Image 1 (cartoon, helix red, strand yellow):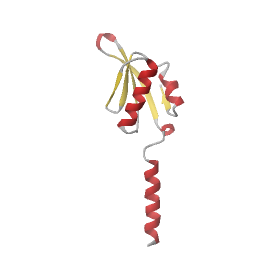
Image 2 (cartoon, helix red, strand yellow; image 1 turned 180 degrees about the horizontal axis):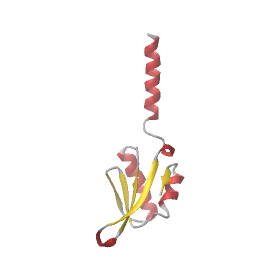
Image 3 (cartoon, one colour; image 1 turned 45 degrees about the vertical axis):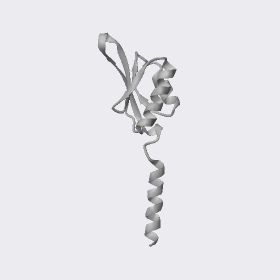
Image 4 (cartoon, helix red, strand yellow; image 1 turned 135 degrees about the vertical axis):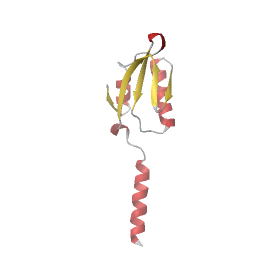
Length: 98
C-alpha cells in the first residue's frame, strides 16, 4: 500500500498549486468603444476564481478612480486606462500582453 501514500502526496501537492500562479498567466489588455463612443478598458485571460478577479477589479477601480465590472471572467473598466493598468498588473506579478 505504499503506492497509495505516494498518490496521496501527489494529490496534496497538486491541490496546493491550484490555479496558475500569477506570473504564468498572460493577461491581454484592449479597449472597446461602447455607447456614445465611450472607451472601455478590458483585461482578460485570468485563470483565477471569480472572487479573486472581483478583488483585483476593485483594486484597479480604486486606483484608477473609475467604475467597472467583472463580466465573463474579465475586468471591464470605464475609460481608456491602457497606459496605467499594465504596470499595476505587472507589479502584482502578472505577465501582460498589450
